[in-house]
Image (tube, rainbow over all chains, first blue to last red; front, side):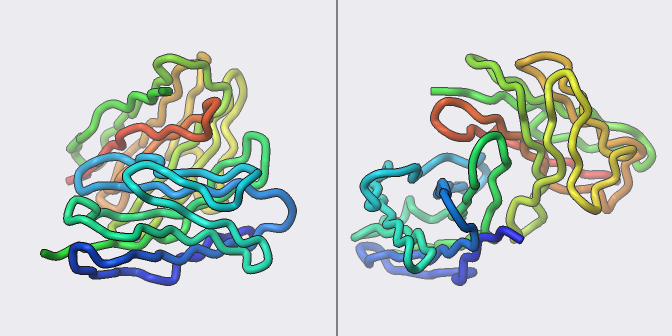
Length: 113
Length: 113
C-alpha cells in the first residue's frame, strides 16, 4: 500500500538551529509531494509542494524541500528556525488525479529560546 | 487563494445525538472533497471521498451508516455523525482539490459527552 513515513516524532531545537525533517514515500511512478504545517490551534497550511521540475522547492517562511527520487525522499529544511516555527509538520503525497492525499504521521517541532 | 470553510469549529453533543459538519469551497468548485479524521498526536486518516452528485467512497473500516456524507452541490459537502458516541470524539477536517493542490478546512473538534 502507498504510504508516507516521517521518522521523527518530536524534534526539539534551539532558536537559530538548522532544521531537517525526514519524509519518505512508497509510491511508484509519478508522485506529487507536499509539506503542510499546523500551528497550535490552527488548521493545516501548505508550506510547499513538488509536482515536477526543479527538485529543490522553496516554500513560505524560509522553508525548502528537496525531492530525491532515488531515495524516495522529500525532506524539509530550514537554515535557522524561530520560536514561531513551533508546530506540527506533515508530509503528504499522492499519485495523480483526484486521489486523496496520504499523510505521514507528522513531526512535532518545538523551538526553544 | 482557494478557501475552504468548515463549520462548526467546535461542537459538544450528547451521546446518541447526531452532528452535522459542513464544508464549503468559497471561491472554486469542488467535484471531489475529502474527509479526514485526526486523533490526538496522530496523522490525518482519510475517512471518505465525497463526490458531487454520487455516493461517497468510504475507506476500509469506516462505517458509512454512521458517517453520512452528502455532496449535493459543487461547493458543499456535509458529514453527519449519527448516533454519536464518546469514541467518535475527534478532530474532523475536510479538504478539496483546487488549482494549486489541496486546501483544507479549519477543522471541527467534536466532543461527545
